[in-house]
Amino acid sequence: MKNNRYQTLGEFIIQNQEDFQYSTGELSRLINSIRLAAKTVNHEVNKAGLVDIIGAVGTINQHGENQQKLDVYANEIFIRTLRNRQIVCGIASEENDDYISVEGSDGQHNSKYVVLIDPLDGSSNIDVNVSVGTIFSIYRRLSPEGTPVQLKDFLQAGRNQVAAGYIIYGTSTMLVYTTGHGVNGFTLNPAIGTFYLSHPSMTIPSEGNIYSINEGNYVHFPQGVKNYIKYCQREEEDRPYTSRYIGSLVSDVHRNILKGGIYIYPQTAKAPNGKLRLLYECNPMAMIVEQAQGLASDGYNPILDLEPTELHQRVPFFCGSESMVRKAEEFMKN
Ligand code: AHM
Ligand code: MG
Image (tube, rainbow, N blue to C red):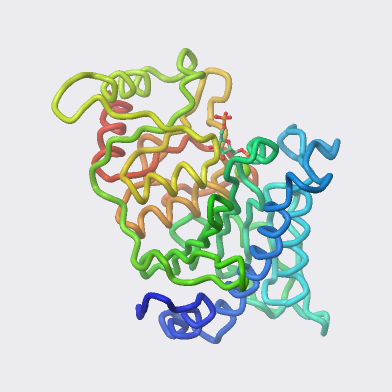
């Protein structure tokens, strides 16, 4: 993978196009569309405090959660941008009950890729001016080209992802993505609306001293997680670790990739499969973290090896620095 600092994302995508196994330019155009949608959503997120756009819109999404206006907006923008460019044959979104089949202007379904997206993750942070993110995951379809997309095209193991990424709308806006050749991060220069390669070849330190978990749920955690938290807090060797939890998956994982750390959203007594969604949140973050030389697990097995059975499936999630995830897995197994 070629990368020069100060390169724009557009230049980078074109320059690295040949790295894709089946490159015809389609995946490049797809990532370009995500870049465009990200800039549009970023514009809206940035003025959330200025205009009357924050606050619940009043509808309840697939998971029984109150949708915020910006969730709805981001969902529409990403779907519309991908649909209008006719570069995907299907889209599944965390905000929609079912997947969308996309056909070209000729009425055919000739595109090769499906996209799964969490358009605005961490939405409870929107109206308090804390970072939120977008997460995306891209697969080649399994069903024959030219036919309408099927459920099985979306229910693929994370290992099959051809690309995955996130956008973090933070103190600055970044787009971080991988096509299976390492992870690169691009920072938006808002004055001219251009993403620049600011974080080439991102790797997560193999050791870290940050643990990120919602400890408010402590009493409901499995014993292995409780024991691991006590391990993190014990005064020994390089510990205690420090605790950092934003409650915005993209932000917590992004920080941990840069500094070293572990993010955990485990199963709880109330939520036996945890909270996070395998297809929209865990698989893409797992691909990025593995590509950055970290690990992602459900506490026992690599996330990317899990065979999904439903679109909105939830899964316990442990991800971050290799040695920290291995240690947490040890506690889970014992
Ligand atoms: P969302 O998709 O409804 O925004 O929920 C996902 C978010 C993650 O970003 C975050 O890590 C987690 O939920 C926080 O959950 P909790 O408030 O239970 O700690
Ligand atoms: Mg989410």
